[in-house]
Image 1 (cartoon, rainbow, N blue to C red):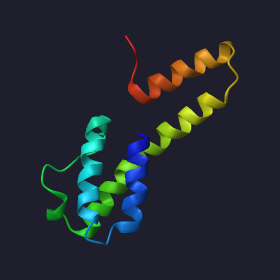
Image 2 (cartoon, one colour; image 1 turned 60 degrees about the vertical axis):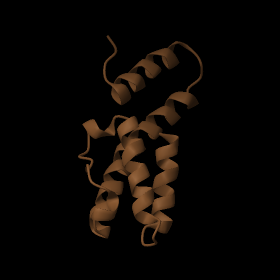
Image 3 (tube, rainbow, N blue to C red; image 1 turned 90 degrees about the vertical axis):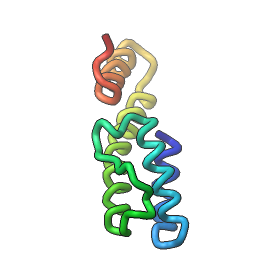
Image 4 (spheres, helix red, strand yellow; image 1 turned 45 degrees about the vertical axis):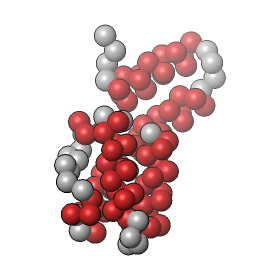
Length: 101
């Protein structure tokens, strides 16, 4: 998720350059590795085939999915290491990755 966050930041500054499609392709691949393909529709074609608004929409969707995860983990890491932290960690894990069996 950290790599995805960094890629999105790079895309925001280079989206209109020639590197925009390449960064978008890397975002797509990283999103698949993070299982975001279950939450957002990732294209099968090369990002060069997408126009700028389509790439922006895709990156925006990836951004919106990774932000809650970072917020949850930030809160969990800020809690003191007591019993409540264990409970909160299991809640964060359940929300971020689905219920653990």
